[in-house]
Length: 285
Image (tube, rainbow, N blue to C red; front, side):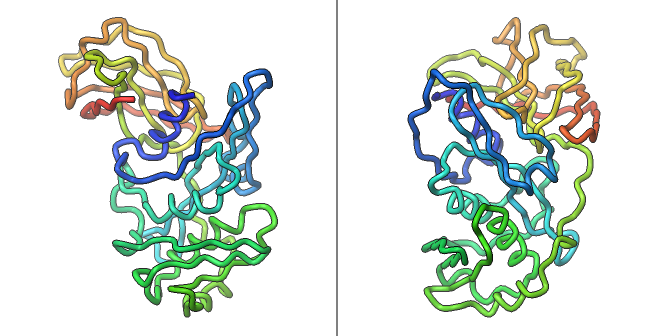
């Protein structure tokens, strides 16, 4: 359970682990097979959700406001075991933003210091923010918030408030339709991250993280001198990473350059391959 929790957080944050993700521990039954409940939006954009060994997970979409195409949003997959506050988790994850790897500079950041004060779901979801939200005139920011919430079952509409008062941004929701979602390209790399147990010197595994669940066709890691590292490759929980178990863990050090060769295909048949050198990050769990 501890390792699964860490991987979920790492999938969401990778090198951007400084972001806060709300997660509450739940008792996961060990005598029943795991299930994943996905929103229709998730299935349309990313295909069938990956399975889990135990417990019930929830797959949904975070729509980040595009900085490159005004008034458009970019979908990103997310997973949680916390059904009870799934809307709150989704909004807070959206506010944290995504500025890492190949996505650096691609999304409009929410104002610094912004906080979700309250979320009330009675068919029409009311989301109340502190004054830092202001009177946002950026359509993509408002659209991202609305689309992220509208995918959840029972949500008919949303209303944005600032310190308990309706925001002028609500007027922008009248223009919202599915055309604001940018089409997804091929899978992309987020980061190369090694993980080790706290207090342990050597890494346990090296993970090549992708921006969505994928089937890994090939993954090879090389030193800067061109020597291939020996080890076994596996899929991570939720299929968001290729996991490399090194034969000689002591070879992997913080910030060392590692060349990765990879071939993947996502659940809807979009394939990608690459050959790139990245600096290795080492995280403890």
